[in-house]
Amino acid sequence: MVLKEVVHFCELEKVLGDRHVRSNATRGESTTIDGTPAIALRERNDKQQVTAYVATKGTPYILRLDSSTAHGEGTTQFRDFGKAPAAQKPEGDILDTAALTE
Image (cartoon, rainbow, N blue to C red; front, side):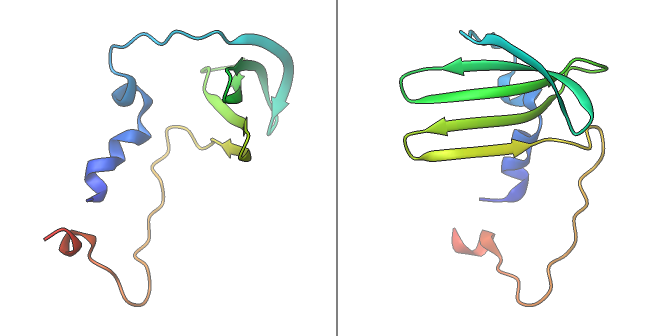
């Protein structure tokens, strides 16, 4: 798979498109994430629990996602909104993944 084929997943609007997402999320406590005021939104089903921390000041970006399943827990932090990611060419041998599918 070529990077340009998956990079669109970095843009939520492109992933969701015009679909409306239904959720049974409930409002949780007010808190701060890295100094930004946020509100916790909690959603649970029979397989997992997810808490999204959404900024309450400025643009309502998702700042952090905490998830818990029978297989473990995980946290994903989001920051530097609106900034292009810094990419550097790796050192050493480089594997051409396009050649793997030919």
